[in-house]
Length: 344
Image (tube, rainbow, N blue to C red):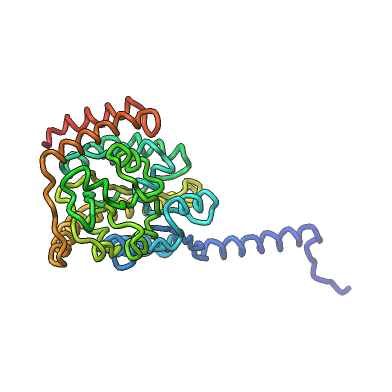
């Protein structure tokens, strides 16, 4: 009698084949590298500037440390528009994050502008002391607004730049001074000083200086050099008005889609970059001021009478913005923390 080999029944055969196929698919999936996530980051910083160089270095480190799982693509030179445009694009999902000045940050969390009040800080140490201690509060506010605050950054001490010497309040009033459209602090200060500011976005400042639409502006020496504003002015105030800061933020939903290990890489990389930015930007601001002097720009010492008026106007601004930009309690906390520093 002829015997035939036995075969599994169809259901058993199907199960065996299905499990084998699934096992192969799972093995292949585990062996395949995770898809790279490219984060699109916008900034006003010019390419080639001190800020851009450090950001590019930070992006390279994140890419290397994450084995290519996370890459950062920067849009420099205000390619994505002024900071209001950038915030709008982040809200709309067109951008994943941004390196913003405090003006842009204030469009997300108003309270952060308290750190840029005129005449609030006299030294870098005061600012650092207050900012470090208020960081957890601001991080929580950005989280609530839908953003992860990755790291702080600096722009530097802000000076007035003009084509006439500014020695009196009347001199300031004669200028056609740029007033950043979204900078509520500057608008309030200029109103109290009798300055008719010309509202413009940052990318519009250089063309406005070139055409004569404005003949004065303000910024840190490094910003003035990087943005080429210094070539269109003759004088700068020796005493700064305030200290301009910034920060690097990522949309919270984008951050949370990253694997926990990659989130940590981004956070650690961002904080390393932020520390390097602060250190180098301060040195580069000093170098930029010297470069401006070498180019023929005179840094003018404001007479005591003008300084007194500016100080008075600054303190009036502090009070005027309570309830509009920040609560009274936050202003009091900043002042008390500053005084605890004993850095003056």
